[in-house]
Length: 225
View: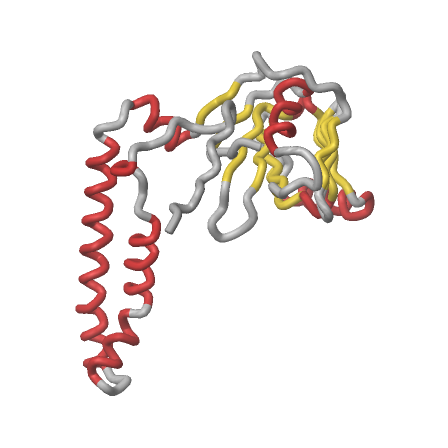
């Protein structure tokens, strides 16, 4: 049996790898949380009836996965103590890739998939309405609602480069992965991450740094094309 091939990391857009002992054991964490959530049903099954005694048994059973979570936390923290502080900071807060050193990219750069698209223009970022996930502006809810109405009517949303303070890539275990455009003086725009029909996501980030002169903060890693 051959080991599953893992694609190599992108040469620029990746964080320093953590040693195996310092990585979170996601599978075991999920198992412990699932056992905690279903512990009342385990108690009812052990008791044989849906009664208070079964609930008490379930609460006692929940102590086992709780101990597991504590043990996993101790192992994770012990592993992190063996990692250099700058690498730990990358995984907690992200790795910043400055605009300096970006390959030259001429605008407009269009990153498009079957349903969504993002276009990097000389004056800003234009995205399809379907790629727009969330707005959080400094003007409050009324301004956000007005902006969404304009985006709905136009089928697209525009953010000028002058308003963008930084660009982050991140993941969300409960929803779509996203780009976070941090705005000046505060607020943000979330754009959906998606696979383009042609090109690599790294090309989009190259364009952000080259066209917009905006730094990219990595809270997720890209693989090599």
